[in-house]
Length: 237
Image 1 (cartoon, rainbow, N blue to C red):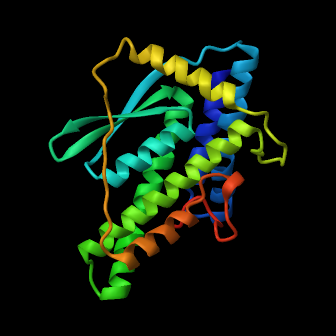
Image 2: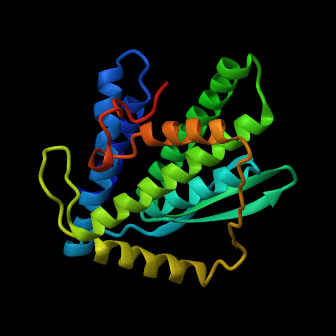
């Protein structure tokens, strides 16, 4: 299958994963994304038959430290690197990687942010009857911590060769794939030096908010390999 056809197929899965009419279909499609990327990145590495050039793609988002940390971890999970370009009160969140990898890294990041923001405000209203900034901010921090931990766990599984695809087949160890993309990205960055690495610090001063955020971060399904018993969908709508 050519790289163009692979990307077209994954874009169809992307559309299916956003389906509100059929949640089961959305769940199955979302679970396939990371496995497909992993599998076909391996194919490129082994066969070297297709060019999959490195490039960058940006999205505008608010300057929230927790978002930058989540974006960085999601980028690494999907074989990319993350940079920012400040634009006043907002930032251009820039994902550097191959077209397929950065497309889906951005998609997963946007879905996570939308869900966590919605849940943080809903939980605050449930507890306090209104949106309390300290609770909401702590919720974001807790969710960010857990999502970051889970991304790192999945990367370790992928590198070790304990990650499975949707058919239950164990994928080959992907440490060489991660290393190859890192080298290619570094080469690309050497000619595009205007990008700035992200910096972010977060804090939590509401313990309940942080605990609720950790629970939410634990239920965000990043991939089949590390889903928990409560992770029935990629993201809770």
